[in-house]
Amino acid sequence: MRFLPVNLNALLVELDDLPQTLALLASLRAEPIAGIEELVPAARTLLVTFRPAAIGADELVRRIGQRSLGAREARVDKRIEIAVRYDGEDLAEVAGLLGIAPEEVVRRHTGSDYTVAFTGFAPGFAYLSGGDASLNVPRRKVPRTRIPAGAVGLAGSFSGVYPQASPGGWQIIGITDAPMWDLSRETPALLQPGDTVRFVDVTAQPQAVPAPAAVAVVQPVAAKAGSAFEVRAAGLQALLQDGGRHGQAKQGVSVSGAMDRRSLQAANRLVGNASDMACLEIAYGGFQFACRGDAVVAITGADAPLTLTRADGTSWPLPRYQAIALGDGDVLALGEPQAGIRSYLAVRGGFDMAPVLGSLSTDTLARIGPPALATGDVLPLRAVATGALVGAPETPPADLPTVREEVVLDIVLGPRTDWFTPDALALLCSQSWAVTPQSNRVGIRLAGEVPLARAIHAELPSEGTAHGALQVPPSGQPVLFLADHPLTGGYPVVASVATHHLDRAGQIPVNARVRFNPIPAPGPVAPSASSIS
Image (cartoon, rainbow, N blue to C red; front, side, top):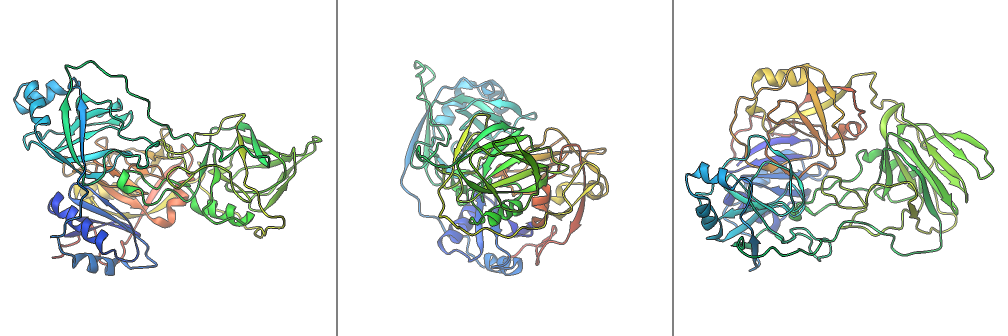
């Protein structure tokens, strides 16, 4: 095993191959180590996220290093056949790369069983190992901006099926109507780790009209007479977000959740809620709602003006970071922030909505959870006992990011620093990076005057990616992964924003400039970590 740094709460275990990775995964699932929060397997790595308060990095490395790689996870005897029309746009190119006819590609692809090795990239996206060993082709040099749902593709030695329309770089050889991800099922992901899969050629058969899969639209628990918020102006983006969707990595679902968790927790604390209850996450202000009935709310996060207007037309400004009692007909308006970009609106008792996979968070990449709020939407509120306690006013943070000052973020180097030249590593921390308008909850796209040059140009097998990862695509311009990042990725990660600066990263506005400050990795884990036998 080789232990590589990821962040102050995560490390990457690199192994020789997929069987060793799955063996270590089986061992850690059969006999868990207290303090490990999430395990994300990939082609030859295992991403381990842990709670530093429960176990230190040095002790975690020691205990993982003692595990046998001979374990095998007990698998359910489940076999799934997937009907495929082999008319993909890359079929001829794949045949040319392999020096065989397209018909032979199909014969080999349908001639063997596959095993679901791990999931990632998107909910329901399974990496299928096995099959004919000759079907080993590189990803496309230039990924497509849109691949349709059901596309069957090849990348390296893996096969996979895109569960929804998305960008991607796999070689597409066919398409299936089988829904890979369907929230109407008890287990939404069709393919689970350990399942056996067989592809069946139905190219010559008439195309069936597939039944539409259930979409992740969240509705109120029930129509109730009670307090509610009526959205008068939705602003640029207003989403429900809570502490996140934990424990769903087996289905390829990341945690998601609030971009600025400290602000989410402060808002809930002020109104007397549990700290990770759902709030409205409002980006760039411009949000306004009317209160139906009585409610107690609090606004935290970005430094944005807050105005209360009574039913009689009287209005006045209100401070953030304190509990506010609203009466029937009161209108609360949130203006454009002067610092930071995301505000958090908590209401005492919370929102009366049904969770999806245990959370009300909206994952914009995976498209799980409630849609963004629109003008005219009505959000029902949960009833609370009269006289419920609220928190004392708090002091707003004084150092929220702005476009006027350079934002400094601490980073932990690794796990793939050796994929970059020494000059690139020096540039990462010496030059300033501009936040481009293409940034969102998935990640901040950065632009530097000089791109980062790679020392290794080979294709990196897919491996787990963490919140805060600085992934570097072939352009050399890093992408800082945020709350809605994919579980796995195929580009090298040069560093990660330290956990204590992730909330700060979630508040950085477009057109701001960022500079990175390297700090040591915890314990014995280092970018040049030696092998542990």
